[in-house]
Amino acid sequence: MAFSGPWRVCYAANLRSRIASRVLWKVSEFRYRNENDLYQAARVLDWPSLFELKRTLRVNVTAQKSPLKSLEFATLRIKDAVCDRFRDALGERPDVERTSPDVRVHAFLEADRGALYLDTSGEPLFKRGWRADAGEAPLRENLAAGIVMLTGWRPDEPLLDPMCGGATLLAEAAAMARGRAPGARRHFGFEKLAVFDTHLWETVKSSKSPAPSEPRLFGSDNDEKALAAARRNLAAAGVERWVKLERADVLERRAPAAAGVLIANPPYGERMGNAEELARFYPRLGDALKKNFPGWRCFVFTADLRLPKLIRLEPSARTPLWNGALECRLYAFNIVSGRHRRRGGP
Ligand SMILES: C[S@@+](CC[C@H](N)C(=O)[O-])C[C@H]1O[C@@H](n2cnc3c(N)ncnc32)[C@H](O)[C@@H]1O
Image (cartoon, rainbow, N blue to C red; front, side, top):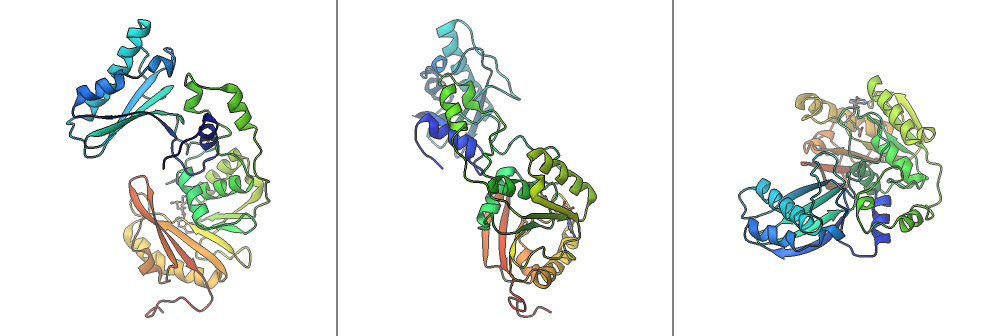
């Protein structure tokens, strides 16, 4: 997604976007055929006016249909161009730092066009600064927030995650309901750029948040270790008082209210559980949802595309989403007692 606006918009997008991974500032567009063209495209930019010599640097190159043989070499040429520009202007060059650089330059290359960006986020935005315990197979925070938004959950409705693991979905839902800015506890790449305006940033940070509501959130898991991770994460996020956690098997779990939204992210074969076990589990999950959650809007997020067939409930929606490189679906099931069984089901 692309947008334009003054720095205030960029600061606010970093601070408040729950679903973005990064906000990049496009600083140049160019045509190219080879690595020398890349060098020239990067060399013409006045890098010392964009960030100070004392900042450490990292260059990332991503390409689609690029004719270049080595992206590593392309990266090196762009880095050389930035450093040469500094050396010409100041007699010295910035240091390169791979793990936690102050400044990240991204180049995106297509077949014969490219663009250079300065990363205004720094660490990716899903790093909110609240995760105390990774638990097993946690969702990224921005994906979890996106899933909650796609369900259409409103903060005045009960929300249950009956396979909550480290409670990413619940922590994100709680932060939404409380109107907390996801980036309130972290730093951003734009703070290291020469154009950084401390006063404007303070104004953006202190701008009014939406009025908080009192959400009713419920989480359960059949694994005590997962619950311990959930407790630690919710406490670190400062939202534990809005989430009731308990140990329960999803197949036995009772609905905590007459209606609400249920979101489950079952284990998936590649990282947890095996394919046959899951094939036996899904029909039982379908039965449990039908028996225990009439009146609820239920959502299952998984990379297992066999789920809708095996769960034997008719999805009312299936939204494709990517979990890293893994293609997933968010399946929606409106549970109405005695209906929605597929023909041929028991
Ligand atoms: C993929 S993880 C969920 C990760 C979670 N969404 C997060 O972001 O941290 C799946 C979870 O389901 C739990 N689980 C597996 N079988 C279960 C069952 N029958 N009842 C309840 N929880 C179960 C596992 O213990 C695990 O914590």
